[in-house]
Image (cartoon, rainbow over all chains, first blue to last red; front, side, top):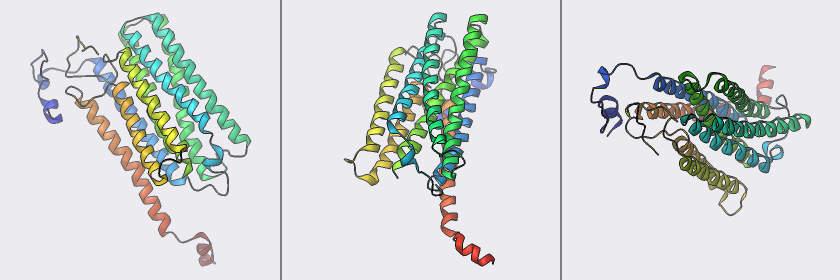
Length: 211
Length: 123
């Protein structure tokens, strides 16, 4: 079945044979999820502009240190593993939410926050080491682009962590009511999107530093 | 992977109601293997050097695909058309911004008067 057919004719095996045009608005859950998916894509488009800036400015080091001198691959690999594992625990958290299992939700959210905080701590210590070595964002165009791109990703991780904490407070006080579950769904999607951006960061910024 | 029972299959929400522990484990496994391969490929001498960036790009795109399928549960199947079309449009814009910028800036750079020559011309 082509995409065009899919948009106009009901899906096979679907009990509801009414055409889409006569079905009325989609359920709130679907609208919220789709809207948040669009937001995430637009966020990724914003990141693509920072990636483009980095790719253009990567060789403009103004006589300062280049990526090969600054980046430590082992360090980045540990950061990456933290983020990948946190995506996994975030997935387990969303399974616990679907079961309406409060204890499981807290447990896996705590694991996710812990891994995310570890990632953030490693990144901040890397940043402070670079700035202490005189390779701060004002040193060269390359470093400005680097700190903007990686810093914006770090900012997203920070916001995600704060969001996790506030959602856990909402689960504790409001329970799994529909609005809370929708917010939790958006949060887990946000967290997975951070991982996708990080794949671009470690491939282009850290592993691309050899060329 | 159980099918959703309450909402119509025609509308699906990214990341909702399609996950299982096995699915997330598989996603994690694929992602870890692809990441380790990337880090290995970037540091090794066994691969012909000009081929390494292409391999890294392929691995990164593959890993993004793994994340989209196993973590976001977006597919090209029926009922997922809206999400998939949005994804395609996002990928299109990202490609346009990144490669367009690189192309334009490389062209500008190649056609620009060198800075020392420009300084002399202004005197």
